[in-house]
Length: 128
Image 1 (tube, rainbow, N blue to C red):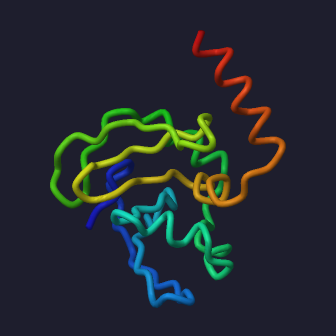
Image 2: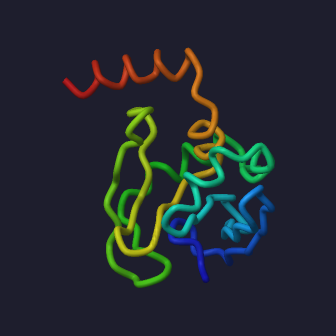
């Protein structure tokens, strides 16, 4: 599978959780992550997933500007969705197959902090 953002090869990685193994795909170049449906939520609760997102935040922000993206599984256009708890986080999603998170987005998604509440406040002001 190729990265839907930079077209580099995606590499499968396994994460052991209390509920079994989860296999995700990480870009060999931009370090974005593809999660099949349900995998990001499952890994969010697992302490073993703290080392999944090894990407650089600056690289993630650069590739986050890429809006037109196709699902790496079915090639249909993805939709940009905001996280329900952290509205400043936006991901590209295919309703049938999963979501793509740019480098460092999974770490932000996993760890909700007071800074995230501030980011959500700023994001809500910008949208007005």
